[in-house]
Length: 601
Ligand code: M6R
Picture 1 (cartoon, helix red, strand yellow):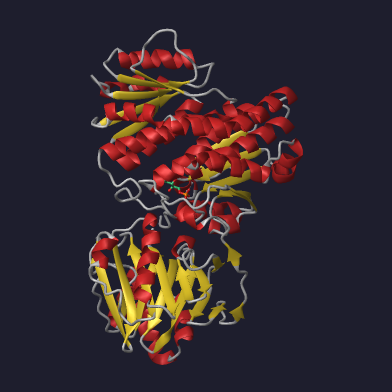
Picture 2: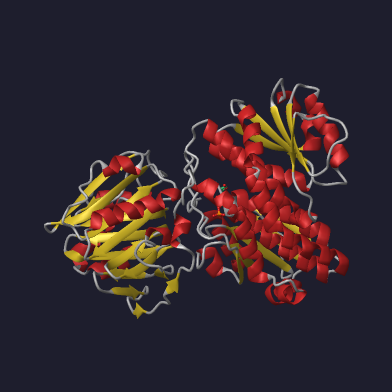
C-alpha cells in the first residue's frame, strides 16, 4: 500500500527511482510520481494509473542525482494527478505512506495561517506544516522533528527541501521505512525489493526515527535529535526472488516455489526430533488458551489452526479477524497467548491488535514472513515463516508457510499434551518427509486443474463448501478465486447451505466441495447431493474416492495426516483460481483495488 523510494548518489537518479517504483508495484497503487532536483529547483512529475503512464512523461537522461518517488494507493481523494504524490508546499516536497488521522484539524489551522490546498489528500498538510515551521526554525532537521510531533497517524516520509540539494530526509512512524547504502549512492525505501539491484544491506528505522541521507553519509536521529546507531541487516534471499524468472506472473512463480518453502520452513524449526520442537516451541507450554488474530488469508490459516490445535492438542483456540479484535472486548488473561499471523508484518489492523494485547499485559507471538517488520519486532515471541519475498498480491507461498508453522505447533502441543502418541507422531514425521514431493506433484498436475478452470471461468458466482476443517480450507479457496478473478465467490459450511444460501444454486452454478475429514465425508456428500439435485456443477476435492458419481469433476489429492492435509488441499485451488483469472484477462499479480501490504485501517 503506497511505495516510497528515494535515491541520492553518483548515478542519474530518475532511472533508479523509476525502477525502484517498479519493484514496489506489488504493494498496490493507482497513481505515481517522482520529484527531483534540477538547477537548484525541485521538479515534480505525476501521473494517474500504471507506472508506464508516468514513464512516458519522464526523461531518464535528466542530469539529476537526487530523486524521490511514490506509488499511491488512494485513501483520501480519488486516484488523480492532483492527488498523486509527491506533494509540494513552499520549499518542501514529500512522499508519504500511511494516514494522517488529524489532517482535517491541521488543514483548518493551516488555512487560517493563509495556506491553500490543491489536493484532497491528508498528505498535503505535511509539506505545509514543514513550510510553516521552517520559517522560524531555519533548520530542516529541527523543523521535521517539530512537525513529527504535530502529526497523529502512520507515516513513512521522504522529504526534500529546496534549501538543501544534497540530502533526502526521512521520518518514520508506524509505516515501514528502510535506509540503504550502496557503492553508487544511498537509498530510502518502503521495502527491500526496491534496493536489491544495488545492495542487500539495509537498516530498519524505528518509530520516531529521522534520517538525513546524503551521497556519502546516512545519519539517523532519535526524537531528541541525538544521533543513533542502528544494526545493518543483510537480506539473505536470492535477488531473483523479486523477479519473475520466466514465469508469466509472480503468482504462478510463487505457487511453484511452495515445495521449497515447505522444506525451508520445516527445516528452520524441525530436524526430525522432538528436541528441536522443544527448543523452538517450548515457550508455548506456558499457555492454556490461544487467540489467533490476523487478516485475509493469514486469518484463514488461523481458522485452520483452531481446528487442528483444538482437535490434536486439546487447547481452546479463539480465532478472530484483527479489524474486529482490536475494538471488541477480549476475554484473555495471563494464561492466554495471542498469536498474530502476517506475511508483511505491517498490516495496520494486525499491528493494532498486537498493541492492544500487549497493552493489556498479554503475551504475544508473531508468525511473520518479513524480517524485522513491526509485528515481528513488537511481539514477545516471533517465528519467521520462510517464504522469501512474496510479490503477488494474492498470497500463496506465504499462506502455505503459515500453515506449515501451525502444523509444527500442533504437532508439538499435541505431543506434550499427550493427545498425539509416539506412533502417531512418527507417522506425521514420515508424512513431513513426503510433503515436498507431494506438493511438487500437485503443482506439476496443473493441467488437470486448468481444464476444470476452463469450464467455470464464465460463471458469475462460484460456491465453496466444506465442514469443519474443510470449511476453513474453503475460505481460502474462495478468497483466492474472487480476489484475482473478480468472480463472486462465497465459502459456506456445507450443512448451513440449506438454511438460505441454497436458493442461489441454479443450473450450472459451480459448487466446489472439499471433503478431507473422514468422519464427516458422508455428511458433506449429502449436502453436495442437495446442490446437485438443483443443477449445480459439482467439483469434488478429496482423497476419499466416492462410491457413486455425484460430482462432475473430481480433484483427487494425496492423503497425509490431517495436520498437513490443508497444505495439499489449497494447491489445486490456487492453480484453479490462477487459470480462471487468466482466462478472464485479469491483472493477476495486481488485482484492482487491492494492496499487498494493508497499512491503513
Ligand atoms: O501481510 P498480511 O499477511 O498481514 O496480509 C493479510 C491480508 O491482507 C492478506 O492475506 C490478503 O488477504 C491477501 N490479498 C490474500 O491473498
